[in-house]
Image (tube, rainbow, N blue to C red; front, side, top):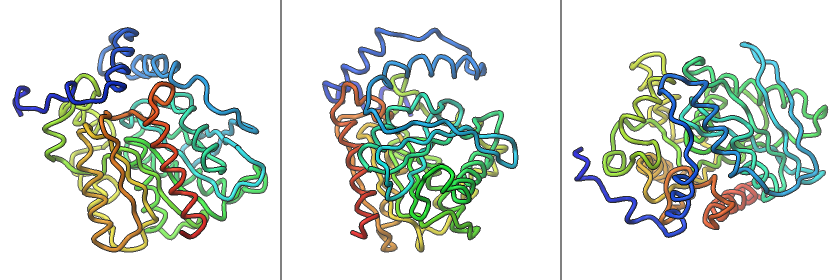
Length: 323
């Protein structure tokens, strides 16, 4: 699509979202080459440091290294109260190539506080070093580890959930489907919290109309992340990448599906919601007006980011109560 035909997103976002962009522009990170992944990760870590300051003080926050078939995966257990009703596994966003436990620390602290549950962040292996489906396999291995060692770490694995933002939302849903399809028991999956995920669409109106330098989600950017994650183009149709090629008509855990209004990935979420709704699956859809992709990070300055986290936490608690 010609750039002049795209929606003028920066004229439509909320004043607070504009304030966030202005803050980001006033604190730029050094430019790095697109193929220098270590430098990209370092710059992302530095940029996210400010946004992760503060947040609730929890009872404990413990880093645990978990053995997996391919090596070790770092995890972090957040504990808000002594008797947790469930464990929520969190998968960070970052286009499959960026992010770690520190870049999403505040989000996980807030989720533990708002749900009253243990939240376990999983530092899954990044691409392009780790190719599909290694991240999913590692996530599942971590879930199995905690299922087998629940008492050792004082986590409640009878009821679990998976949550994530952006690429992490895809990994959360893909991992839940993997557990279901391969009959792997790690506790009853009571719900999925999915903030502005991508679920396998190759084209959509929102992907053409939105996205640019302000969110790193131009069509070229999306193709770059996909190439880094997948082994080859044929995997675009895998039921664990294009999740619409999986069975979404039966035994999908209840889903909270959240979107940003001016996100090029919004149509992925709308299609997921409509698919689940068509087949009578328990789901809720919520769009947050005036926002851009990744707004969940900005709860230090944006009330709507905190609202989106509270909404997801409330939905998960409702599933635990059987409502």
